[in-house]
Image (cartoon, rainbow, N blue to C red; front, side, top):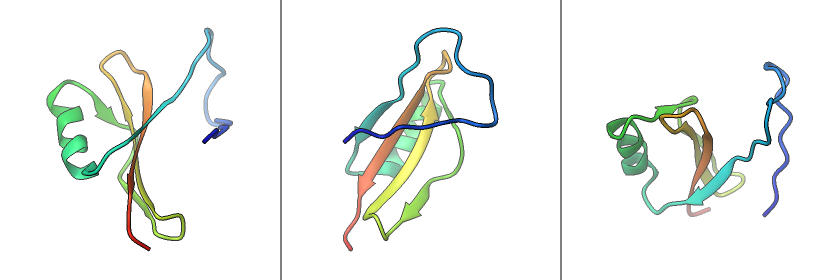
Length: 74
C-alpha cells in the first residue's frame, strides 16, 4: 500500500523523510513498548472500523514517525 501525506501544520522537512508503516497483532502492547523504549505517541490510537484497522502514529527517540496498524474484524 502506498499512502501519501501532506502535513499542513508544520514546515516541510529539510531532508528526505519517510514514514515507515508496520502491521502488528497487538497495537496496545506495541504502544506500551514504544514508551518503554523512549519513543512517544503522536496522538491516541484511532479506531477506524470502516477501514478495518486501528492506527497509532509513533515517534522514535530521534523523532522519526512510524505508522502502526492493527487489522480488526469487520
